[in-house]
Length: 137
Image (tube, rainbow, N blue to C red; front, side):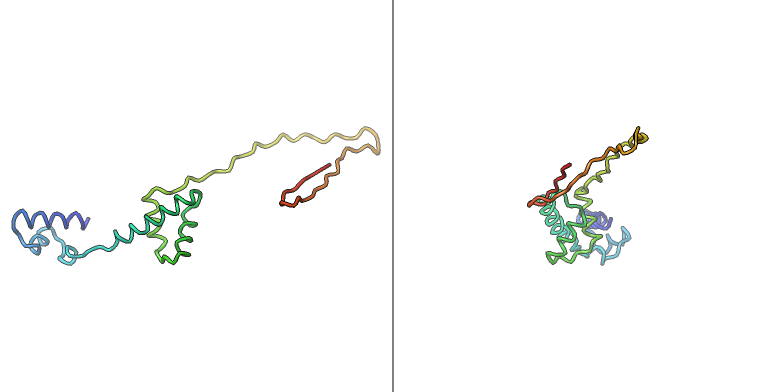
C-alpha cells in the first residue's frame, strides 16, 4: 500500500509540478513513509535463492528441514519470514496420507479333531551381513 501511494506522490509531483511534501499531504501519508527505502526485497531475494537451491537439491525436504539447513549454514533469518517466502514460491509439499488397509475378516480357529494334533510352524529369523532380515521355517 505505501509503495502504491509513493508512486502516486511521484506522479502527481512530476505531472503538476508540486513539491513532494504537498503531494504527501494530499494523499495523507507522512514524508518519512515517502522517503523510507525498504531493505526487505534484497534480503527476500537472498532467502528465495537459498530456498530454491535447497529445493532443487533435496526435493523431498519440507519447510523445517530446509529452515534448519539454512540455520546450519549460518543464516539467522526468522522462521516466519522464511516460511512466508517459502509459501510465496509455492514450495509446499502435499501431505501424503497413509493408505488404509481394509480390516480383515476374522475367522474362528479350527479345533483339532483328536488330542495331540496341532498345527504349528517354527519360524527362525537371522540377519544377513548387509543388515537385511531373513526368515525360514
